[in-house]
Amino acid sequence: MTHPFRDPSVIAAAGALIDQRRFDEALAYLSRFVGNQEELAQGYRLLADLHRAALVREPRHAPHWFGLVSSVANWSRRQPAPPAEMAETPPAGDSFSVIICSIDGEKERRAVAHYQRLLEGCAFEIVVIRDARSLCEGYNRGVRHARGEILIFSHDDIEILSPAFVPRLSRHLQHHDLVGVAGTSRLIQPRWVSAGWPYLHGMVAHEAEGVLKISVFGAPALTDPGAQALDGCWFACRRSLLERIRFDEEGFDGFHFYDLDFSFAAHLAGRRVAVCNDILALHGSPGHMDEAWWQYRAKFAAKYAHHFATPPEEALQPHFILSFSDRESLVTFSERMAFYY
Image (cartoon, rainbow, N blue to C red; front, side, top):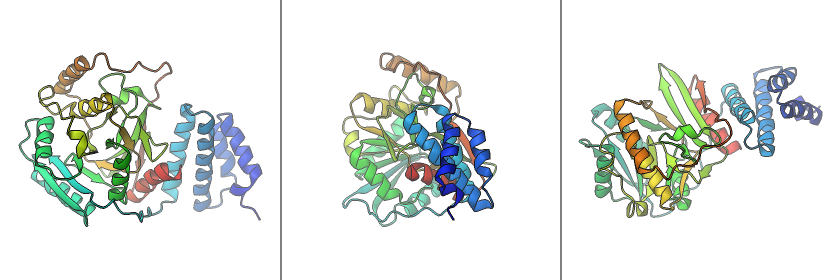
């Protein structure tokens, strides 16, 4: 007997409800066939498939995007699976320099140990700047000390959760000059998230009081090329990029806007900037907009006054924030969003 979730008539009926944007009714209809937790998980998977098919027809329809994200999340919570390691190895000759600015000894120790595990078996070094006058100054100093071909700029409270980190990063930097885990393809003002979906890309996780949360900005493919600005919690580039573009330590002599300035300058210089959706970073601290942030915002606005993109005509959609009770479900979700679709 054909399982209901493989029955063409069931799929057609649920798909018709999706096409009519009657999402709750589609789930209620599929729930009639649910007999156990596994079947419920497969029901959410089918919903995800239907939302994805709808997005192919209407790529900018936000309810389909939100439906896809929430369906994959519910599927992953009910049926997590350990992510498969990639068999490929990084190209021969790749060497890595991790550059971290830190004034917290405990965070530094955790970060160094983490990157030692991630890069085990590779040629790598970890450059720690403990007395940075600003992040731009600290990163520029780190670059001068670094010897690696691939340079990783990381906050000291970042943990990479995705498997096969090294081959994924190496692969991305074969095709792009600068990659990050979150950013925008339409910088309309000095705040990259202001563009709204579908101009936001990537995923970043946070943990607070034992609850794992992930901000899903956009993850329609392994890589979103054409990014204009990146979030600075984590990004990486090939050394060749630093031969022409450096961090502006004169204009941004504090701890804000170093990331937008560097990545936007790379974009304006015609460099290939991208967001990689298959590298998930767990960030230990959310950003905050203090008085200094507003001061550097004004500096950034003045520097790039004639380079911002025009705001989109359509209403801007917010990004998604989802909660997970365990890392297995969280990583399963991010892997399915990046690879299943």
